[in-house]
Amino acid sequence: MTSESQIPDPLEFMKGLWSAMGVPMPGMVTPTLDVAELDKRITDLRAVEGWLKTNLGMLQMSIQALEMQRNTLAAMKAMGETGGAKPGTQPWPWPLLQPTPPAAPGGNAARSGKKPAGK
Image: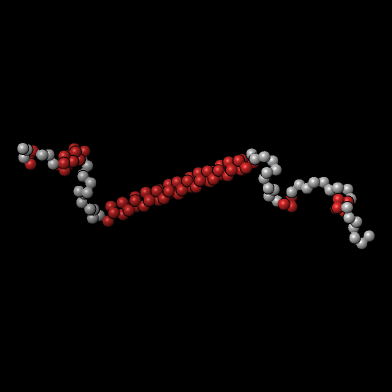
């Protein structure tokens, strides 16, 4: 069987990789005690926050524009389907503007065969 000393330690392996790059391992950095350095980091992070908020706003506007485009296309498609029906099968949307047949000479009395009352 193998002894524990022969099994490589994964943490030691990672430390070796990070030390070769010359960058300290994340989480192993001592916290800074310099107020000016902290102010600089805060300013940098606020700039990143503003940039991310701007990108979020642009992303939301792009999504809304695509949703409006989708809804417009769906409405046009629905109108095209109803517009492709046979003429006269669709109800006229405005009853006052419905085309009426031309009136017969003599008005309503001539059509009904009755004489107007009072004459």
